[in-house]
Image 1 (tube, helix red, strand yellow):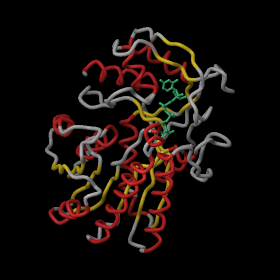
Image 2: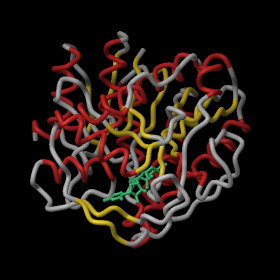
Image 3: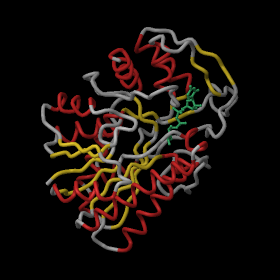
Image 4: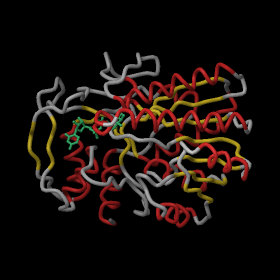
Length: 331
Ligand code: UFG
C-alpha cells in the first residue's frame, strides 16, 4: 500500500515525501512540474536513500489520474498540488478556480471510484483572512481576501460536503501558517521562479546578491516595531505534521481542520535580524508602503494539533534562517 502525494515535487510536498520515506511508507508522486522539476524527485530519493515512483500528470486530466490509481494500490492521498501566488490569483482568477478546484474535484472522483477515502489536504491560514483576534484557533471565521484564499475555502467546503456524503471518508484539512526553511542536506527547498512573493525567499536572494534590497511593506502597523507579525514554521516540522495527520486518519470520520503553526509570532524586522544573525550578512532594506491585503498580526493556536495529533513544531526561527540560507547557497 502506498501514499500518493500530489504536488510531491514542490516545496512542502518534497519535504513531506522525505519524511514519509524515512518512516518507511511507499511514496507515489503525481506532479505536472509546473512550479517544480523532476530533479527534485531525484533529490528526494538521494536524501532518503530510497526510490520513488512518479507520474508527470496534470490532475485536471481525469483519465491519466485514473490510470495512476489503476496501476497502484493506494492507501491514502496527501494533496498539495495547486497554485498559490496571491497576486497572480487576482490577475487570473479563472485559472486559479479551474486549477485548484477542478483538480481537487477530479482527485475526489477518482479516489471514490477506487474506494480510497483517506485524504490529507493542504489548506492554509489564509482561510482566516483578517483575523479578529489572535492566536487563531480552528473555530475562527473563514473569510478570504483574494481568489487564491477563496479557492482554499471552497475546497474545504467541498471536502466537508464529500465527507458528509459517505461515512468512509476521513479528511484532514491542514491550515499552514508561514512555512520557511529547508532540508538540512541543502538538497531541497523553495525555489520560486521570477520575483519571490514571500518574505524569506526575498531575504535569501538579497543576501545572495540576486536582488539589491528588501522592501519592508509597512512600518505603521499596531505591533511592537510597526511591521507585520506572522507565525513562521520550519518546513520539516510542517512535513512531520502531515505524517502525524496521516497516522490519525483512522481515528475519525468526516473532516477535521488543524492549524499547523508554532504559536509564536515574529515581526518582519525580527525575521530580518534573525537571518542576519544566522548568515552573518546584513540585509539592505528600505521601508515602503503597506502591501494591500496584509493582516497586521497572524499566528496560530496550535493546541488542537498538539492534543489530537501529538504534533508540535520543534525548530526555532534561527534554525529556519540557517536552513533557508544553506539552501540558497546551494542554488
Ligand atoms: N514582506 C515584506 N517584504 C517582502 C515580502 C513580504 O515586508 O518582500 C512582509 C509581508 O508584507 C508580510 C510578511 O512579510 O507582512 C510575510 O509575507 P509573506 O508574503 O511571506 O507571507 P503572507 O503571510 O503574506 O502569506 C503567506 C503565504 C500565503 C499563506 C499565508 C498563510 O504567501 O499563501 O502565508 O498565513 F496563505
